[in-house]
Image 1 (cartoon, rainbow, N blue to C red):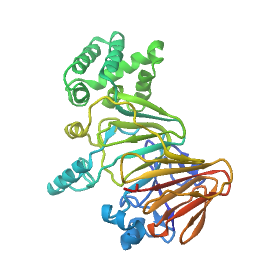
Image 2 (cartoon, rainbow, N blue to C red):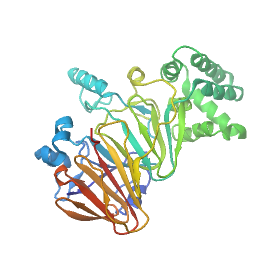
Image 3 (tube, rainbow, N blue to C red):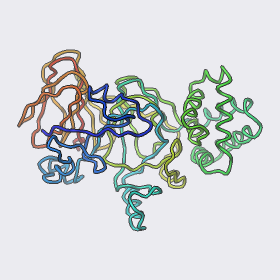
Length: 399
């Protein structure tokens, strides 16, 4: 087992100190947006000896990853994050694996630097992800039915000025035409209309009307606009499902799903990639044409993820992506060992209490805030709660 030291990223949308409070760590940075656990070269975990986890794995991938994982992926195929959002993240979508491979190669061939501000693809991998909520969590995910969007636009038109009402009427016409959601997204992001003025007007109208404020979807627009005033992404948010997760619920986000995390604390697991195409609520590069090409513009309910094979005090989440799964051991008191359902190299994180982790080669007690990488050569493994606590175990799925 490799005990890990992990970096907290200070993106502006992060909370003041929610991650260090969760894990009982010394507060060293603020805002606190994401703590990365894994071997992503952009911010790898480090062993207590100081070596980057990506380097450690590269020295002996067959042993640490396992022969199957090493052959399929060549590196740790997933990345774990403790994510704390005090403000909305950018509206975004991720490419398929095929899209990422071909378009990363195309941008490389063009000579565009990897750190260029207008670069779309940072690597050749896709970035499906899941999020397990630790607190109440709000997000946008996937498109609403056009009829529901039209109803909201119709309710707003009498409350805004004539210019804004005319733009909203145009958006209604788009939503009544062919390929309505893709065309609506393009209208909001790429038309020559003054969308900022429309957003400002409609959010003022919602805030001034108790009946409109009582509609959760509309009230959320006002909340987002307070952080990103006049941003086109506020109107994009009206096109998307508003999702509220309770602690212990999870959501799964595949390629092509337009989404944004709004607020809350959670454990995020994803394929080991940093490919993000943005569509608002950001000061970063927005490539409307590329975003539209990658987006799956079809209405769909929020993709909630239910556990499979749940046992006492243990739940296993297996999204439709081979790169990762997440086992949650949540014990109200001391407990006998639970088998860890791991395949290949695995990342373990204790967020409460303490656990004794036993592998075929070693034994280690993890307390709140501690994390380890368990190598494939150490499996099988188990974890026994020494007191009430929670342990997260991420690994690839067995194919």
